[in-house]
Image (cartoon, rainbow over all chains, first blue to last red; front, side, top):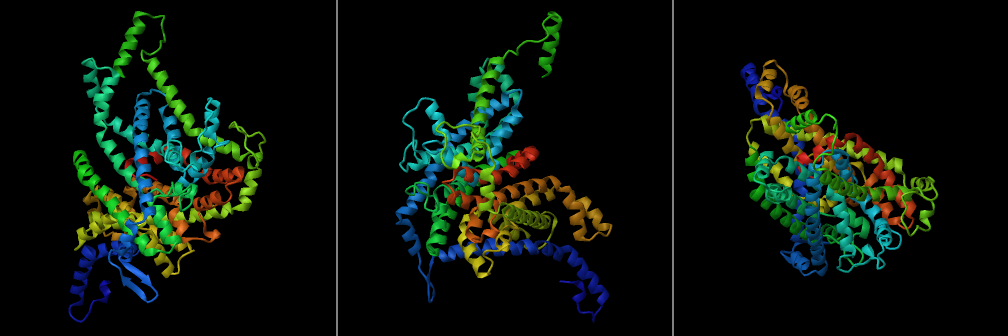
Length: 317
Length: 296
């Protein structure tokens, strides 16, 4: 690649200058790209290829044997996989259904508050900076049935039938899945509020002035102006929130181990993948799960990109 | 604002004795303030309760049935036990090393690739850029198990290399840097080239200083991601001497769970420095997270 390595027999000066110009023009850019490209190919491209490859092969002592769709059939006939996928989807849907209205109300209030909005924002955002592991450890005790913070507060409010929260694997509003949903809402609220606030501040104020002149009450203009104007923000939050919810791992692992105890009620898809690949050494099944996970995320990303982001980017430009 | 002021001025002129009066929407403002402060109490209560419990030695044996935000027997006992159980200083040094090197590398390699894609003209540029962008659509979880096996083949499991190497370059940083560098006028770079500056010098002395805000955003995001990551360290390191803070906390949380005070003291030690850093940098942190639209 160095110009000096050129054969110097014929017109070395001319060739050297041409090579130097070519180097500056083109080769230097490959130089800039070499290291990042190498890293991406080795640590992103290659393992992704391996995941796809491993999902259609079976490891045997004699080497890998082509298995076709065998591992996918195993995966799709596994109750545990469907349980994990069902958990992940259920937790994601419940999370979004609670956090979106809540964050919208809080953001609207923060937006209209004349004093003290900044310290409140800082407080609401605080859990976002705390690792999901630390949040899970904290809430493990908050949800403790006998002396936990939550049940303690409920008891002082006069409630006698106190829920078991994390210890109750049943599908109920006070069971383990409800507990981890509350945890996620608590942890994610600040982020949702801040993003919705940014959306609120981009709504032109003359819309509100016009509505006020027409005699609309604040509530009416909130319903007819604010909420429709926030549509792109909501779509963005739903899309990114779905992908985040699908890849949920750290807090559930800390609370329930790779199996998502109690009774696998907290096992997510990524935890299933982790357990099959890391603990059971069933790499093909884990790879098949990875491929399914990849397809689901790709579909959601594609919908969000083509259906929403493209239009938004055009609007900004 | 201007309308309010004129009204206030005319108001004072008409009734000079009334200097101050409640704003017309004081009910709404007070109601919202109460609701928001209640919300903030709910956000803070678990933190305060955790700190109070971590300072109580009795918490390991029995907890009061009514939660208290003040320890009945304030002592640092749990913190001594927690730092005996877990080499917390070592964990911090590990986290600082891993987060520091990955962030430095991520910024450098993202900028290098971003510069080439923004200002370079070379065959294969669009194909390579699409390849970089495609990595954005590959969740880490898809490739984590093969990557873990690959690390084994490289004899890198249980090493800092395994914690650092996979995160040195990425599509997101490259994309963000390309967008930023594309906004730098070509004339600036051309002028430096005519003055005889080498491409590397242009990159380090002209391009990078102009990208400081984006680099800061990228640095903050990467620190949050890497500091909080637990999935990859759990897979690739089992040697306690290599644990990061988050990983050590996750392992301790699962093993010492019955000793409430000690477990919560560990959690406080893991969270506190991050919280303090956040309080100083909150404006930049919030802006970075929101502007990029990616969560930690």
